[in-house]
Length: 305
Image 1 (spheres, rainbow, N blue to C red):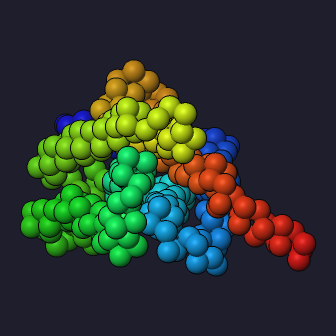
Image 2 (cartoon, rainbow, N blue to C red):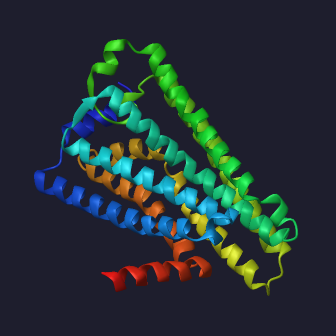
Image 3 (cartoon, rainbow, N blue to C red):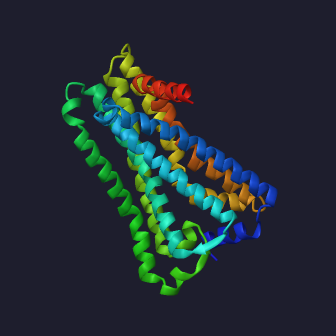
């Protein structure tokens, strides 16, 4: 029995009590509603003002927020279903898992693009307008999705080629390991995650140190850019734990077999929810322009209620 099947077996064996399951689901639902409500306010503010959707920086942020909402919504649905329906159709599970994986892998790539845009704005201010256009930004977003699809879709193709047709009509406990269970997929996933890890961190470190050494220390914009990239780096660090998730699961199973479901819940909150709560802080609170328009939106809602 391999590590993935062992993980699933332990999850099934050590089911939570009703009270503990209810507590976990309430926590997850409250967190997801809070994150999506704030992000919905950011999206509304973005769409209502031309200053944002004609600025490449805010377009990338808009994509990040939409992507976060998709990811949070789908993972929460899967979390709740695992406690209520428990097992359901493999074909539906594959669809949910694929979209969630697209959104999860998009986030670090989007953050890397935002760091590059920040670097160009500080180190090449005269060329920023020519290099970072809205059209090129949308093309970059398309490239982000294409990269994620190239990483994730082979899982589906390998499964379609190797699994019998009856498998897609069967019912399983919905995890990536149960929906895409071919061992070649696991090897491909590990190689892909290492490539992502190296690529994104090279971008983050390069842009940070170039801003650090190129811009003058007295520059307020330079200091803000460096702080923004540090926050991006922290956000990427949390997101990148997704790539170490298989190793973490195996370690937790070895160390805490009887508390494995609690460990998985803590991992879910830290890896999936926490990084998505940082995006509103970076631009919704720290960015002066966005904060001003967001305040107007909130005040208008309060005054009309």
